[in-house]
Length: 510
Image (cartoon, rainbow, N blue to C red; front, side):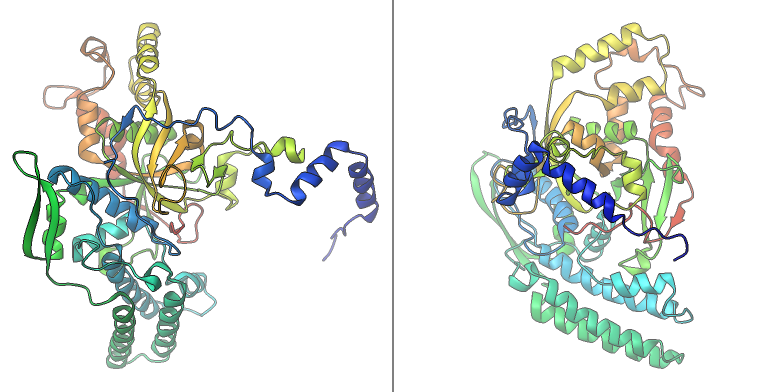
């Protein structure tokens, strides 16, 4: 290569001499020889202030933590954990679990159909086109998004875990995915060799038949009806066995009383090419082909935090995604940017800007979990609000965002899907500093956002009356204007299409 510079061997000698004369380096080398990096880099007293009791904890204490094991189904687990929380709450149930196998069976079948449809629609493209390369490399896996789980549940419903439980191959999905990939690739080869519509339909039908056969052998046949059984409270609040016969999966979904259409996905992508308060559509991301691609609303950090705080206010378990590979203590179940001191250990500056990480593909949401509580200082928050309101002269949207996005949360309580071995019996902690850096995707209820604004939490009526907005009237209330400015306008924008390989938009699959 012209002007290429080889490694300077003299420099290597210089560096080697420097290291040999560095006593701290020798200590570090000895420590690292027999220990994991994180065991050496951990800040000794960082676990001192670990929170064990949360001021706002709405996890049902008797519910058992779920376990996705060696599969990338976290996104489905997180959605079903939202549903089961509501079902348990309204029925006074100590523990209940929906079948992840049932939902993932249909998701995989739909994903196979979508793969074949995309092969058909791209038949005129060369095999080395970027779209086809991406499809053939990533067309069938475990990963997904919240909206995918919503589409599956709305079409096929849900069933209890005892009706269709996990088994070894469901929880260890690598081999199954590989086999289905072979079936789909064989179908793709045949489909790209013909233009006859009758042949195309025949090849696609035969391929889907083989996929369905494989899924049924591994997962078992999905139930059409089942008997719903659970111990719940009656009018006297005593635990009684409830048995409802011949329930369909779609009827079961309705019994959760969760309106999945009410939820929207917010993302925070702080890059110049991505506008705030703008919808984005991820190309080629449809798993149920007729439902279309995944869509997200990009918002600034304050708006994202405001939305999270609104859900916490009403004790709504929420689906969220983040990059779990940064500053993570698995054994203790903590994400904390102050947990490890890599700089002192290696004498290298690892500080980075979140935008740079996104742009250079070092950071992207890769795991979905459920937020079920937080620890905050309510007294500190009230003083913060009071102080801000007393000093300000400009009562505008920016002030509202500041007041509602910073409610002095110290840590979040997380329901994970990695079993009960790690963390606090399967519950994990995210510190506030870590959240503001790495939690960048969250699912929230539009109804609860509107309620939060209407009740203008933490701001007294007299202070709230000082906020002035254009076009406010009896017909167009202040609360409605605030919602429109924060979320409504963005949700109405025409989605900008982004490619599946774009920064940030990876499927979550940890």
